[in-house]
Length: 91
Image 1 (tube, rainbow, N blue to C red):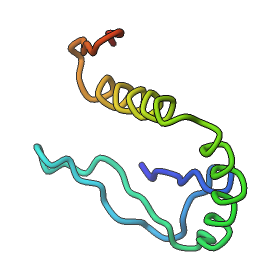
Image 2 (cartoon, one colour):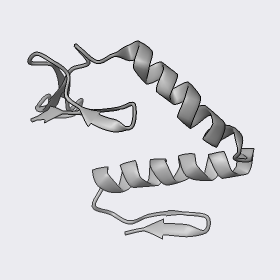
Image 3 (spheres, helix red, strand yellow):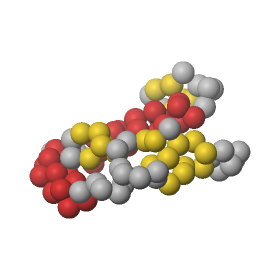
């Protein structure tokens, strides 16, 4: 499976076979990823013009909450066991 990149507001697959993403426990290849052919300058400009202003409108507490939700989603995807944090549990 080749993972696409979310760049400049859209999903784009890099050129070529890509690099393997390896499970550090089992050594199995999980997927492949490539950024070849992705316009990095355009991606940075998009991030500065779209993401930057939106991020600056958030308080530090709101940013921390968003990061916590990202961490929770990643942890839930990796573990079948419920994970609880102050104020919320993921099942």
